[in-house]
Image 1 (cartoon, rainbow, N blue to C red):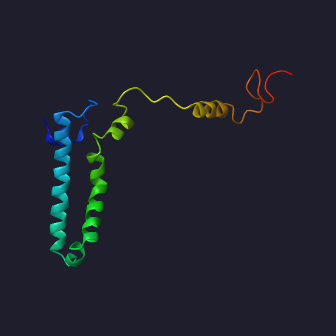
Image 2: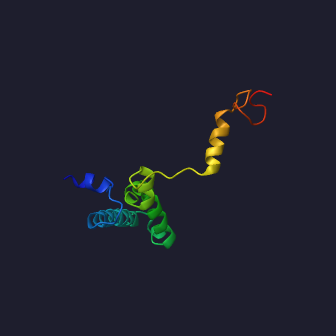
Image 3: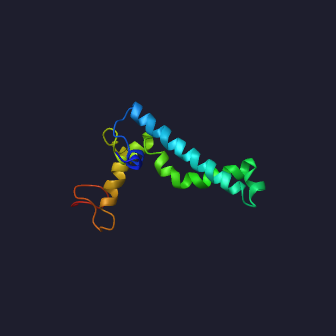
Length: 122
């Protein structure tokens, strides 16, 4: 199997299996390797005094986390919920249902049939 495809494909199981933990660890090690490499290369430039501080290193980590974030959060519970890989859909709240019904008739001069303000026959 292609290693990159193995790293970037989410695991469909909802529990933390050995394979899923291995993927998460491999992604994390890849991220650490990239941060260390970039930090070392930047320390060879005139930016060395800035990269040698804690805030300079933090800036490098945050700058590299942005492109890596999509890969790092693949198998987290929040990402699985967004992708629909975990359990049934969440039932909408009662207020959301009422709002949807109210907006269904938005822009219509006459209200819904059978009641409400101005609706139906009088």
